[in-house]
Image (cartoon, each protein chain N blue to C red):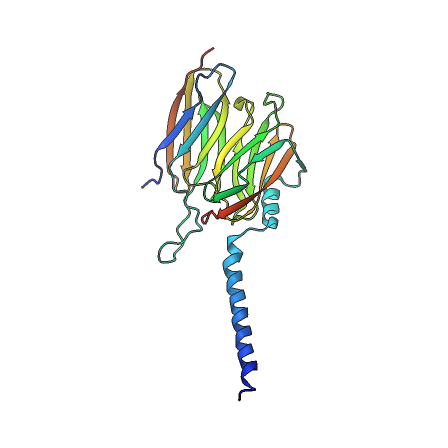
Length: 154
Length: 110
């Protein structure tokens, strides 16, 4: 009887462990997008166009205490003339439930290629910014952000 | 009932013709993401501000498409080249189709 007890106990322990793992998966899966979902979102917007690193700068706090309100500033290297301007700026959070944050359309009438806003960041991750220029070229950057209290509702 | 609250817009001081004017625009809105649950565990329906447009003398100078990752009370800072003294019209639209508008006069000096 006593000899028989441990295997039965282990069986139950394993079952519980499996159950807990399953529960974790159920809870975590829908709350977080994957870099693949970011790739899908980027393909949706830009197709197979080449995205180059550079010409865009993304400024976020290194450490954000409140993920619900994270200040973000984007600047693009562009003269903003009729011949050469920023057409649009796009922000992404690779590990939010939905990676897209905001898409902004600009033009030479804006005069200055700068945008600031406030975003929700669910967990520590990389934020990405993409600029589309008037000549059709695409430029991107990514920065790491650490979040103490995640934006629970993004 | 519309979930829009007060709109708040500020322009940088002494705009001069041909110079960029800084525009800071905020609207009070819960920006309900659709990912939250209420007290009894039912999902709260999504209702976010999905669009902000700004026109200057009738011409569109700014357009944003927002997603649920934009914070409560959406806030933007952007620029417009001061050309003539004219109205800036801001228009926010949410998922329910409610619209909030706000007009600010841009007085340009030479």
